Image (cartoon, rainbow, N blue to C red; front, side, top):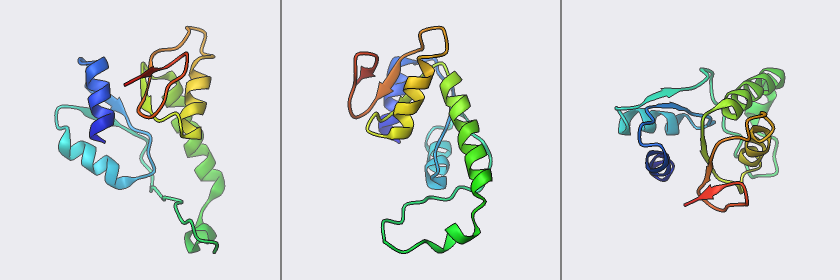
Length: 125
């Protein structure tokens, strides 16, 4: 988290309002605790990490409303694409999709700050 915030503060030092798109509740709690001078905006819902790398179907999948999960993901995607900037990792398919959709907004897009790799359209630190 500190790397993401350091990149954002370096590029946009006036930035105080931050939209957070994560499925990790602990990340949200840490941001609020460690950066009290910022306001973090996010969609409020119960976050579930689908990080089970085992071969068995996780128990929580049996009780998941996948339509609701899809709608929340699309809402997160919409806000991220409309943001004035984005810090992510281009090795993530989700972040790469945000970058490519953001480029189609009609204004050419803003800087996308990647923590792991860059492309012709990205700023990478």
